[in-house]
Length: 200
Image 1 (cartoon, helix red, strand yellow):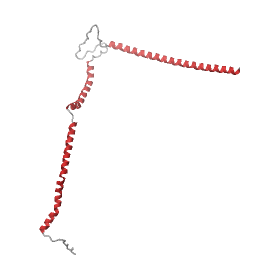
Image 2 (cartoon, rainbow, N blue to C red):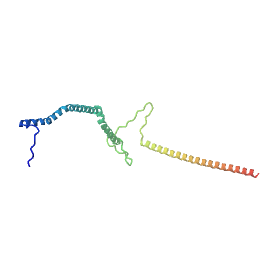
Image 3 (cartoon, one colour):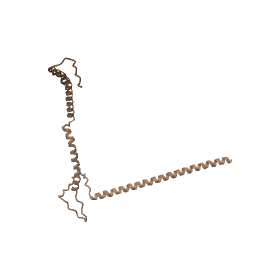
Image 4 (cartoon, rainbow, N blue to C red):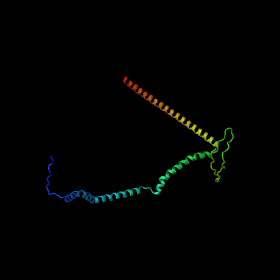
């Protein structure tokens, strides 16, 4: 069966009226977004101002964190200075060793110096006062002998102190033994005199 015919509740509309009705029905869907954007414009502008303010604050914060020229020199120059000083320390040792004269060769012959010889400097005398001369090999031998004698004297002193401590300990032990013997003798005398009194 065919579907029942719909009944219209209102008057019949012609085709132009239908188009107008459709446009009128679609108008809210077209106007709502426009009205929403117009209404939200204030909120969007506030958000934009807030965003710009935050960007300005971030730029100022970054600017305050930048290093001044002096700070850049210190931060980036200090490691270079430290590295140079360390390299200097490693370089000084070999240079000073190279400047020392070579030790004499075995057999009593002096080894020939490699390179030019340096002039010997003597210090002037000041009013009868002589400045100390640098230590020679003979002075080194004397210093070594003096050091050995000093060490031997320390050993002897330690041994003497050890003997004195042992003697003092022995004397204290003997004194303690004498005191103990004295106490025993006095106790024995007291018990003997008590025994005599009891006997009488």
